[in-house]
Length: 210
Image 1 (cartoon, rainbow, N blue to C red):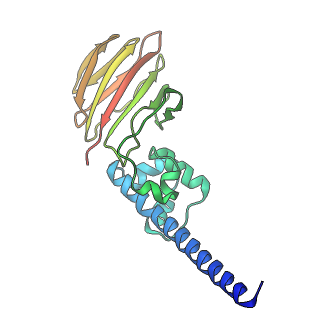
Image 2 (tube, helix red, strand yellow):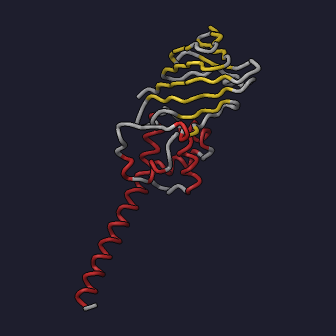
Image 3 (cartoon, rainbow, N blue to C red):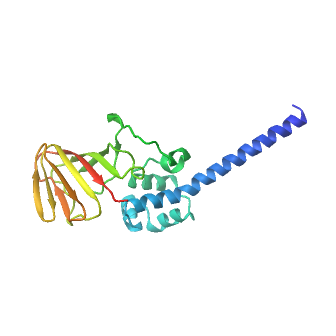
């Protein structure tokens, strides 16, 4: 190889390495704003996200402000809590997501929930791209939404596929059976429970405010 060719190759490699470095820096710098944006769309405080993700409020704040790069473990926890694939935070192409999301039955993603006995399989597009979230829910016998009533902005629609489920909204209890549906605003106190012997299976939709 001639000295001129070698110099040209070195220059090309230098530009390539510089471009790669710039891309990596851009990706790392975009993680914090993405987490902050999703947290606000979820209407979560730092403490609420910390509780959902098992990541400290101080760490989340530093990541959002760009003063700390999250570890893989931290990013995995935050991604699960915000119902996003890790690729959303590190893939530049996912910053402008497609207008349609197809979810094969075998590829439903597990959605985080703090409620024991409740399993959620997502069938809608990822939150942040869409405001409507729908999951196939499995509610085990004896499980419920907790001692305190739930209350937050938005709406929910539950369509019961199998089993039975009791849903209470603003003090009124609805005993749901297979084929029943209930649609309510979640700014009223509400709760759910399955006091029966068999699991309940439902299509559960939540509309989160912008």
